[in-house]
Amino acid sequence: MYFALMGKLDARRKGLLEDKEKGFTLIELLVVVIIIGILAAIAIPVYLGVQNNAKDSSVKSDLTNFKTAVVSMQTTNGTLPAAATYTSTNALTADLKGAGASQGSDTSSIAYTTGGTAAAPTFRVVGTSSTGKTFCASDSSGVVSGSTC
Image (cartoon, rainbow, N blue to C red; front, top):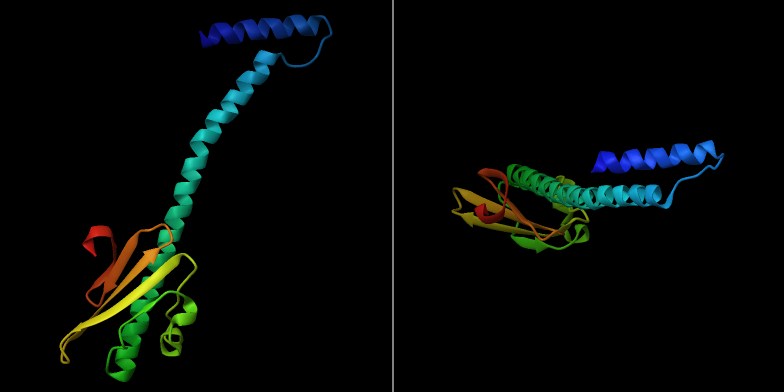
């Protein structure tokens, strides 16, 4: 059916050119508009998914930097920093910032908790993305997401 329709459109165009008429028929313009609409319907959701993945990657990076900063402070001071929840970069302590911790605009919050014993302290960092996903890291693991936190 498609080829039959295109054959008729091509015959119509040839007929118009013989009469020295130039331009596109209404049907040809509608076909182009429909094709552009289909391409847009496919491309826009894919683009939004890429944006969300980038935001989640930013949170993972923030958690990795925070974890590195906590380990650095523990090595320097001999103890873990005090547990806290940070909702913006301005809320991070100067010591954490100096050790490399950061919180980007895509990270809604970072919750830092400590545990273990004095001889074997542990910590856990949980970050929430602006997309609503939760990621966590601990002294014994890398950054993981979702139900494994």
